[in-house]
Length: 581
Image 1 (tube, rainbow, N blue to C red):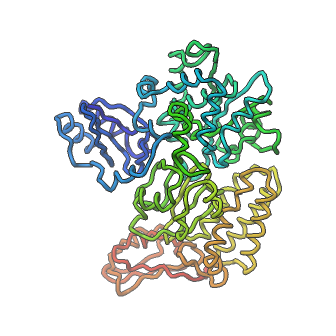
Image 2 (cartoon, rainbow, N blue to C red):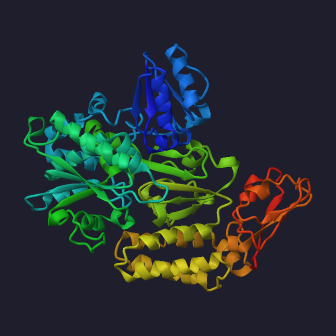
Image 3 (cartoon, one colour):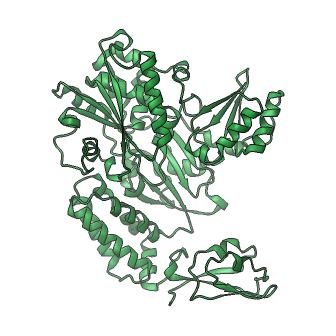
């Protein structure tokens, strides 16, 4: 009988440590594994019986974990806290390659990885050699999962063909998108899968060193990577003459300071070299002159995590998944207003609607969906009437969004799209390295305009000015951050122009979110005088007498919505319209 406890960052944040202590105190033999993607139900424990039956329990706490352990050890699989069929529907429709070990293998045990087939692909790669590896990657159709979707085999072939006495493999684990956590979960849950993929890439291009550039904000991922590398040395899988071959390889971990621009490969290389993370023009490409001016191959976490499966099962097997031009699976981090948020891995070719409503169960409180932001802060907003768009690189690009690394933020009808665009533009303008004028100045000007609009001070010409600025930045910026930074604004103007016009011409926020354009009123007929709204108001703007209607002082009100959220009678209404102070 095994107790598999989800012990990634999401599980720990939800109380997995208390659950662990309770299970162990009750006498359970607990295996700490990574996140299995069911983040919405953390803390999670999967019970695997001696006959192989598997049952998943979620939303546990110390008390329920103790009860679970006692009953399971007594031979019972209780119904309490067992994930429902609706919860388990999250796993249906998924095809797991990258995430296949997450939640199954012990990320702190190399033996656990090997027992599940780990490093078999490395041995096979050593047997087929560089040309054989690149041929399988070519057959697979694997494209870089970091966002650009460039064919992986071309990168590897270029690095192989480049002349140099030293070559490097770099894993870009600088995951900086708000709402994205795919790389973190894979590194925390199955680090050996990424390391094995990097080593296979090393054989392919002739590299002797792998460098993992990971965010310092991912301490658990860093610790498990360090442990994995230590265990590989102890097993003789790293170092000289690996598995008796002529191949020698080792790893270094480099921690970044959290600069979003360092997701761009030349800025990443600058940071690796001890310089400020700023991009440079290409060519030369990193495959010709990268780290220490030596040929360097750079891919992201998800790309490397696919490699061992492709070598083990063959490129043709991978190519059978997905669409003609977008092969295999894609991992998405689902966040926002969905009922079931977490990590999803699906074959390319499904639609956005399949994921949002099929896998994730739709929108919280059965509200309507307004848009889905894809591609992170420099992606784009796809409206509800385009949710049947097929998930592949080209189809997503046609909407004005980008595939990106896999962040997917779902917004309901109460979201203000102008305010959402301002949020993302605020992020990208702050994260701009400042090297080129279009990005440094252009994003700042766009943010200033958006701030005016949500404050009720927009001008009719502002909408066209935003579009003009956005297009200029896209064509004039030096790197991918600047090229894509205007996307959230351009797509929201394209699909939600009426909301911009309402903010500017009518001084109203249709979604009732922009504080400068709304006010709160208490309906006397509905108010029961319970005083709860007054107690929850952080600025003392609500007053009244018990059992009589209360009133809101608009001059004191900061429009934080605490009163609306806590009123049990629906007596407080948001009135959209310019508010004078």
